Image 1 (cartoon, rainbow, N blue to C red):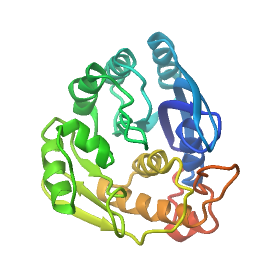
Image 2 (image 1 turned 45 degrees about the vertical axis):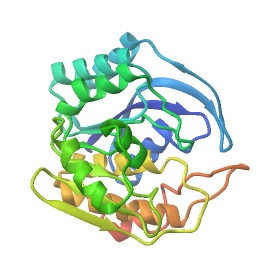
Image 3 (image 1 turned 135 degrees about the vertical axis):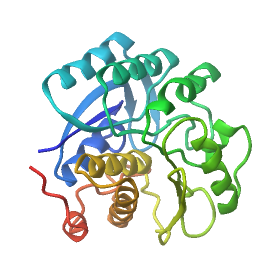
Length: 270
């Protein structure tokens, strides 16, 4: 069985972060390993408290997994601060871990910045050069480029600029724009436009985590980058269609949705 590693925060509500990543890995038939970077107290309504782990503890988790398992692909989510970002980058480089997908968790749904300028710079300087793909949403791409992104054409130009920061490829998620959500994938030579119908639901908690985890799982199974991204977007769309409300606020997508994996032809590498 292929191994995928998630380096991210824990969501006590079970809809995002490590929890969403593990469910997504399971849906794709890969074994999920984890390195927790932060613990959050949250539910479907709000985040009430969070605490970052020591960078040395984050490193220890990654090394424990890498010492014992053959990691085929890995992703990062919430990294919390510059010290953790730098430590994660160091251990990934030292261990030669491949197929890294970086979801740069930098901006909250409210639009508030989650990291200070030094931490944001650490993403660009230390982690992006190691990544096969980065997956910013529109506010995160705008923060990285210090300018607004207001159209699909803006997204295309932004993808080219972000790729020049050192990563191999860029996926900008366009769900914040009006109309059907369009994502732009730039692989360094070709721009790909991916559009799916917009689904009328408030239950979209953890969509970014789920999307990047699905890409990671597919890379772990040996799919190429474009195929992995396209398949992950299909999977996410089906998961949103079957999203649900376990609480009073914004619920999660259904990671183990009926027929999603069967319809997509899950790789059965063992």
